[in-house]
Length: 93
Image (cartoon, rainbow, N blue to C red; front, side, top):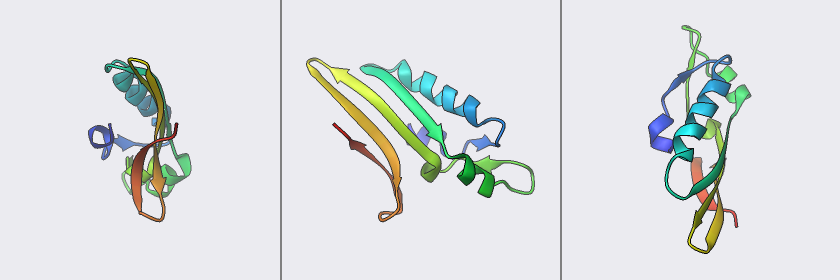
């Protein structure tokens, strides 16, 4: 998911559209039960270039998804880790 969307152009008016597009494309993949994608509006606003748009960065993404396989069900997240300076994916529970 990260590598599919980082670099996508967006502005403050298209954040919700991109959030939904990411959610819908990931939702159809095997074992994904649910997904919630949030893009940080303040981060986008701070990166708007002279042409009126920004490029999606990993640090702008906050993602939660539930994945189920067999009897296992996990809550997976991707959030920017300031200490690592990297958007990390991890199993929450």
